[in-house]
Amino acid sequence: SAVISQKPSRDICQRGTSLTIQCQVDSQVTMMFWYRQQPGQSLTLIATANQGSEATYESGFVIDKFPISRPNLTFSTLTVSNMSPEDSSIYLCSVLNEKLFFGSGTQLSVL
Amino acid sequence: KNEVEQSPQNLTAQEGEFITINCSYSVGISALHWLQQHPGGGIVSLFMLSSGKKKHGRLIATINIQEKHSSLHITASHPRDSAVYICAALKYGNKLVFGAGTILRVKS
Image 1 (cartoon, each protein chain N blue to C red):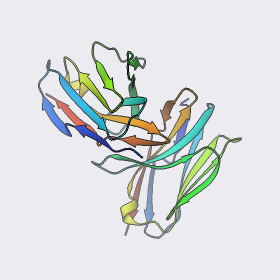
Image 2 (cartoon, rainbow over the protein chains, first blue to last red):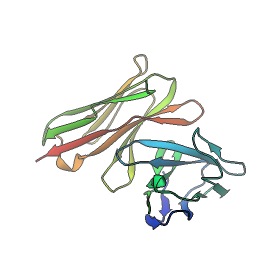
Image 3 (cartoon, rainbow over the protein chains, first blue to last red):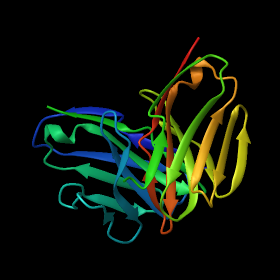
Image 4 (cartoon, chains in turn blue, orange):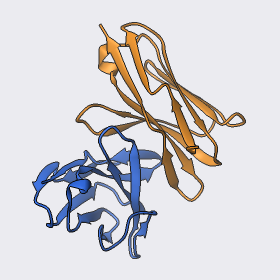
C-alpha cells in the first residue's frame, strides 16, 4: 500500500500568483500522477512525473503553466503558475502501486 | 464517444437495496479500477480487476474482458455508501482513463 500526504489542503489565491502543491509518499514509487478535478467533473490527467526525467504532459497542459518537480522516488510538486479564476479546481496527486492511491487533494480557489 | 462510459450518472436508492453501477470501455486495458469519492473527501481505491470477480464486505466487482464491461455491486446498501463511484481503465503504458462517475445517494 501507499500513504500520500498532500498539502496544502486548500488555498485561496490572487490572480497572477503561483501556488506549489506538494505530495509525499511513504514508499518509493516510479510514477506519480497529477490530476485536476473541476466541480462536478471526473479527473483529468495533467501530467506524469517520473524521477530523473522531465514530466510527460497531457494535451492541453504545458510545462510553463504547470511545472512539476520530482527530485526523488517519494516526493513531487506541482506548481500552478500565473493563476486565473479558471484554475480554480481540486488538484490531486496519485500513485499506482498495484492499486491506486490518491492524496487528499488541494482545493484551489483563485480570485 | 468517451473511452470509458459509466451508468447511471445519478442513482438514488433506499437503504437495504441492491445497487449496480456499470462501466463499459472501448480500449484495450491491463486492469480496471473502481474508486470511491466522498463529498469533500479523498479518493479511495475499492478494487483493481483484471479478470473475474472480487468481493470485499458488501461490495462486489466483476469484469468481463470479452464484453469490455465491469460492474460494481453494493448489497444491503446503507446511507454511508453515499458517494461518487468512478471506474478507471488502465490502458497499456500505465495511462488511466476515468469514467464520469456515478453519484449514489442512499436514503434511510
